[in-house]
Image (cartoon, rainbow, N blue to C red; front, top):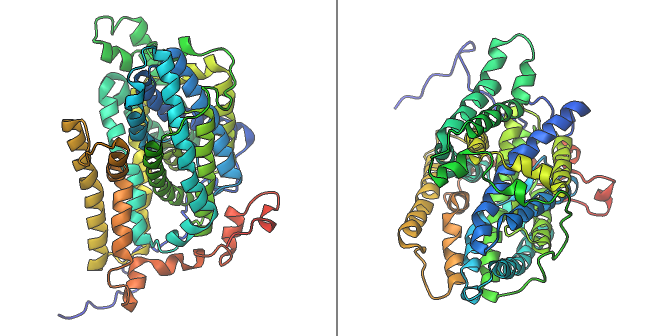
Amino acid sequence: MAAAPPPKADELQPFPPKEQLPGVAFCITSPPPWPEAILLGFQHFIVMLGTTVIIPSALVPQMGGRNEEKARVVQTILFVAGINTLFQTFFGTRLPVVMGGSYIFVGPTISIILAGRYSNIADPHEKFLRTMRGTQGALLIASTIQIILGFSGLWRNVVKLLSPLAAVPLVSLVGFGLYELGFPGVAKCVEIGLPEVFLLVVFSQYLSQVLDFGKSVFSRFSVLFTVSIVWLYAYILTIGGAYKNSPPKTQVHCRVDRSGLISGAPWISVPYPFQWGAPTFDAGEAFAMMMTSFIALVESTGAFIGASRYASATMIPPSIISRGVGWQGIGLLLDSFFGTATGTSVSVENIGLIALTRIGSRRVVQISAGFMIFFSVLGKFGALFASIPLPIFAGMYCLFFAYAGGVGLSLLQFCNLNSFRTKFIMGFAFFMGLSVPQYFNEYTAVASYGPMHTGARWFNDMINVPFTSKPFVAGLVAYILDNTLQIKESAVRKDRGNHWWEKFRSFKKDARSQEFYSLPFNLNKFFPSV
């Protein structure tokens, strides 16, 4: 077969790969003016509230807690999230990432709630305290996995073998894998969820084309504009009696006064360590939570890579990812001390917000951490914002998770898309990353337990939980195939895109790594990165 003729000078050429994402208004090291930064920080605070409310709303009633306990758990998650975000942005990866509650910890927490030793407790409040202490003990042990793998540098050695090709399924499904929280959440109250999706698309994408004034204002603050409009609309529907005769489930999702957070929250309350009592320990539950901690570590690795791209930084060096994982482990330790009922990982929706606003400034996220701590102490005011109907958050997720997934696909620019090897690894990893968790989730929905079903619930969780994580399955398949398939062929190294990331494998090989990721206060002298 004859080879194609070489392209002429005036013919169109493919877009060249970019080591840093162009078009970002403020990158990781360039903060916006203070008034704008404060508003943008408040916007990040609003966005992370969805997960902060959804997880306690699912767990606390099963633990035996009432609205008062639910409000206190929300406050505690907010408080610890603020501290963890500051730790991560100052001493961890230094990326503009929000460290919030993670859905991956919900399954093992429910297993603790259903443990036999709590079933005979008649008093709901006592059951809540006992189960909370059980989750605290499991999280405390689980934190050691991330702390050891991160600070010892072991995770750095794993990430060094991650090529752009293997990173594509991992990073993409960190965003796309959360599709169940998007439109299915919108549909729970479509009359307020759908307007949020529509208005957010219009404000962030279209108004700048139509208006001659305030183009950047509407796109950068589109979340504040649209949430205010739709929240007011939901309030009008609520006081107008639109849901007076609706089923209880519809009222919970649509009304602005059904969360129970405002009535349950105190005016001022400072969360403190061991506020629920001393942690209790169970070996099986600790093992299950340790496996979950490892899954969260893998997912956060993909989220760190995505965040570095949207912040217009260079590829994050493996040693910096490892440092960030260690500090995420410290965050998990704080979760266990304060009693949040869930673990910590990178908030994927906030990565999407960075993309939407095109502002990847570290200072903005640090300001948002200040809002988290402030509103966690002023309980009633924090509960007011936390009572935003959840379909409004689901509407935002439709855009944010799409952005987070899209950044993973953008890494294909470094790979040879004309290689059959590339197509096989990418396609197979994506397919298995969607298909395997689908099987595990369908099986659990029908049988009320996972495919691994023995007498030891903790062992079941160690097998079932990893295979319900779409980014973990996809990342694992891609990582293994990419590091074992045809690796001795010289052309494969370029097909994988490794030559693009080679200079970022070591912290000292590229001067930009020093600019973006070095520790503050000259701490690099005492804690050098490699």
